[in-house]
Length: 519
Image (cartoon, rainbow, N blue to C red; front, side, top):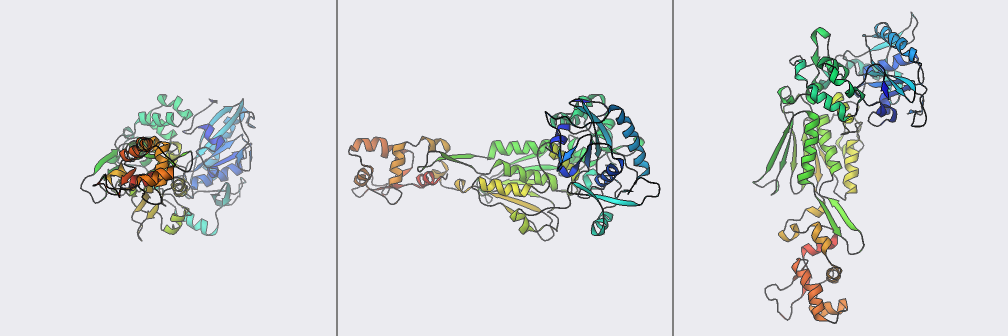
């Protein structure tokens, strides 16, 4: 797949498979239809839901929103000589048929011998935009929006709401006039492009910071006064906290519980993509544990985590995505013997009810950080589109964990996600804390039989021999009782008088946990 003109900061394969870009942000056109494409560009520029604009792929037919192209089927394609003519017409339409003036970025690709043209139309900085309803000289003008996978005229409440978005560019997409282009790290920008397998990575070394930044839409303004955008400084500056104080993630662990005097703290600073990944890696390596418990009633072992990684990932990335970088409060992750909690500021939009969040039914219509979400999606750290909470609920349930909890106040000044620890990890006593996957897997068949015999009530040696149908006492002591006592799975009812004639044996708390699949 060879690029014929310029390159965009997105993998073309993602556009043709809907892997990291939602279908509502892509429109496929089998051929050049200037009027229809103009309206779609206008809709993407208005970016009504703050999703980051979208893409028009020309030369690819579609069916039910799916591109008709595969490893065996070539796209419809365009004639190579059409590309230059289309780009010239787009330039003219951007001046004469859309207001304020707006010009998408373009790139052409060759796929299986066919040429296609991709238009990238990021959310505009001067919305709302309106376009001619048709390309005649006396045409009316209208505002256009994306509704699911369709482009429609804005009417009624939608048009009034679009008007309120005038000059309200999301914070992460604004220029940072106190910063310089030198504050963007070309190394981090190239690293990102390689990471997401963007075709732009092949020529990034030949571009200066401004040119590369404009290609990635992290630099804006006229050439004589170009500025980095906030999202560029957050992702492509080694120390974004110098521009956005408290851009960090604090991980605090309380080994003795939240009320204890001891705690361990680790603070992650740096570019947003790195600290997100480093935080998740640190938590995974140090605080996530898996239990493997052999069940006496079935051959396969039961496996579960204290906190499932997928749920932790969603909670942390949600905080990175939706927090305000204008508020001087870090993201805080607290871990103790009961919860893993992720706290960020501020809370969800007031239109979202907490009861809907708890049920996994909340859908946001407006995203605080449309560009941050766009970069996180490219890094495969989030899906966006309000899928995080339902995934947390689903993953916690699959792990056998209690339901997660979501908290905020009436002012929505904060958002707290609480992931309760799996019940199998809530034990506090020393014997119970010593139950590990190795111990439970080393329990012999004989010890298991002994433990099952003691489920109902304590028994003395004679009763156990009868229940287990064992006639040879030394065999019982060597293969059953002594191993169970040594592993603290069984205990004496009279530990201070081991030889008492009334001595019986019972399951210890540890033994009960092993049989019940807990640790």
